[in-house]
Image (cartoon, rainbow over all chains, first blue to last red; front, side, top):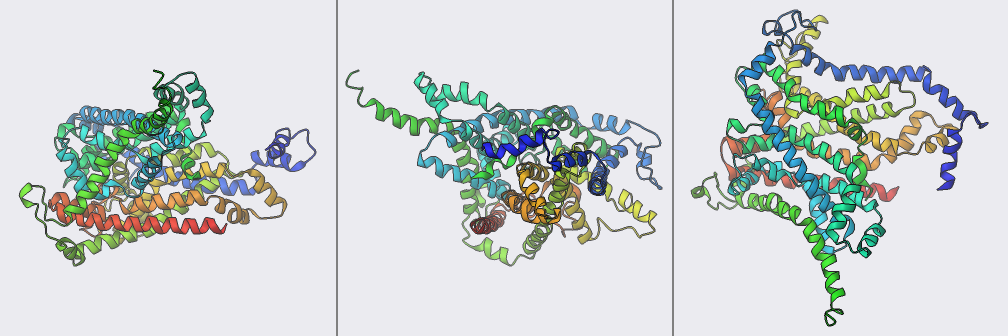
Length: 302
Length: 303
């Protein structure tokens, strides 16, 4: 352990040490060696290609309907307009779809985080054999997604009286193997001594979980919350099956109803799609650090 | 009180070892039973019936659905198209995400943070909107891509009316949408590889290409396994993206298996028959998962 950290220390103090490799690397980090030009060139070319579909889409959404299908195509709108946005907003009940989607995403996320934390905690800190069996069962759900058995899942939702209700997409989505797994892996790294100490102090098991363990796991809770919000915001298949009343539609189902029409109204569709992205973009801007540093590999270690 | 004292430890142990974790896991257990076991069992049962969603149609028909299924050309078409899509999509997703991730964390990369944001952006976009974006980009008479082809004096390609070109667009759109998350997995794993390994290798004179094959790739093995497993399952159940991209078209050429289940189960309300398709797909997914885990185990035994 201490041995392994020595070279790092040396490297950190590069100016003092005699070894040149560290120094040379440092200068190479900033200069434009042929390798740097090559690697950065390829990546930035790819980045432009990756950005192109979204840029083209975004720019098109600001074109008036008459310009959308005109040849020759121009990248920038000749006449910038928000008319597509205005039509989309007035013709479709977007405020309602937003509210529905947000309700589903927020409620499901809160429940998912709490349920996953409790379950992951039990998997990490209690040793009963049935827990191990149950853990394998939960893992199996990642390999056998329920979309695959949607006819019978739909009947179950219907028989529970959840058809055509927002609850019908919330309740079945609460349990996620990923979330349970993330918490289990995290709680495994928390030393058992912490629990023992709290027990000696007379705290009961639930108090230990609620006031000691859960606050410790805040970063995991935030990461899972972001991912859960993202899954639910973008969900399509369950809202499609469960919601019949247009007033309950989520954004994805509403968008699909525009693109599924015989004559696609592209002007509306482009702006409607852009509008639907805004909340996720905001979530990303706020929680960027958590998303980009999320190590979803965590579960792989055993 | 004094008589209860000797009993207490054992009861406390039982409470602590079984009852407490039960309270923690009970919600998940109920949800697992209601939304996983129950539909699974019910699906198996329905697959032996002629159920159409209304009580009087629930009649036991034995293996009839399965027999019909094995003679159903549409089923084979959907299944083989799904397998073709998966076989092409998984290596493509894997290679693109790995290539981008390795170059992004490379010491030669300049502006990595900004580039990473660009590659990550599609993650924010739902499969439905990804489909819409690519449909717009690849429109036959109005799309940007065909316009560019025109500028290069090439004939416009039939991205919507040629089944194989439509599949190619599906692959591109799927890769574009899926790279972000896979990249996140790869970059996290790449950063966990100690730099001293590379330093030692370069002192020994190993080229960077060699280092990639002998250090990076073997150490990424667990992540690769995860990416390929999740990618395979994801591609086998691809649905939302295609719904908005081309709705399985042209015609029914690119109807994949989940869409086939949706069509038979919900548009034609043949729940029994659709359940039989579900069971076959379940079985295929189980076999795929088992094979991949087998390969993964064998590989890690060798190393």
